[in-house]
Amino acid sequence: MMRGFSFRLIPTKEQEEYFWKASNAARFIYNWSLAEKKRLYTEEGISLSGYEMCKLLTQLKKQPEYQWLNEIHNKVLKKAVLDCDDAFTRMFKGQNRFPKFKSRKNCNISFYIETDIQNCGAVLLENGTIEYKSIPKIKFDHTNKVKLSGIGWVQLSNHAKEYNLWALTENLITISNGRVKFDGEHWNLTFAVDIPKPKKQLTDEIIGIDLGVKDTAICSNEIVYKNINKTSKNIKRLEKRKKRYQRQISRKYEMNKFINPDTGKPKFIKTNNIKKLEAKTKRIDRRLQNIRKTYNHQISREIVNRCPKAIVMENLNIKGMMKNKHLSKAIQQQNLYQLKTFIKYKAESQGSNFIEVPRNFKSSQICSKCGAVHKMNLNQRTYICLECGHIEDRDINAAHNLENYGISLLQA
Ligand SMILES: [Zn+2]
Image (tube, rainbow, N blue to C red; front, side):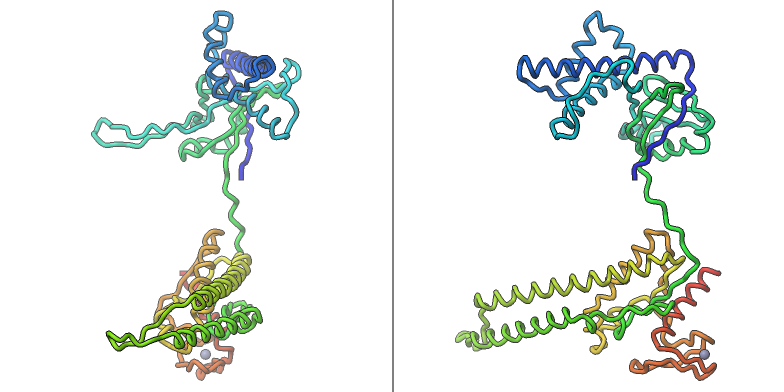
């Protein structure tokens, strides 16, 4: 997000004199450039690029009657040439009319200020070590002054102090579109800085998220995201079709196999029909993946958009879970690892804490009320605590345990 800034300058007498001269020179060169382009185009039918016009400028400055231009920083004049070139480019694109001459009365009194950061490469220091140096063309210091190329240090008004502009220089922040402008009363320095989006205001909420097979994500605020593989008709239809193709493929392989006389072993041939069917199943796989991915994006966005202070999730021991045949397919289909990755990066990019509980944390066996631990069978859907009598849905209880882990971690 580009943000524009304007700060009042307090120039010395000499500096102010230079500001006037530079603004006049910029306007003069803009008009000269415009007249020259016009003349070359109508008389000779040629259109010069900005670069070629800059070469003409160098010639112009050598002529005795234009010696006064040499008092002005060359970049100011070059920029005026390029500004004129831009005006032509915009005209050709239909974005504006034929460029006009700038009259003394009727134009912005301003000139260009260099803002690029010059990369000086490696510099050998006296003690023999190498330092990589970059020098910004515009510099702000701690005494509320700014160094402009071709001019030197200029005082800024007190108002600028609040902005800690020196940090732009110390952190080598890229500044663009630098100009010194006269507003009819004062001289101002204007420029733009790319500022990242402000971080969101977070709430005090801590969300524990239990990932599961029956439902995909169960949050401690009792919001439940269903397993799309069980609810989506689209997925069921595609899965059915995929199975049909797979059966056809294996039948065709079986039909076309023959016994290799040399080895005595069966040999399978991939016919064109098989290739076509395999391409079709691949296409279905991609569609299924996309539907599941979109759903994972949707879940993660909804959770993270609540702007919780922290999100707590289990350490997915996918390998361990995959050993369980009953679970492995479901986990693969839901792409739980992907979902966790999405939640993690979205949470962290807005400044929410992302907490992962250690692998030995038994979120489903602990009583979220009293902390007692009971063994739980996978098919046992309700948690019943024999110590305190707490009764809760198995997954909600697990999500609460994750939330409690986050609370105790952030309090510590
Ligand atoms: Zn209990």
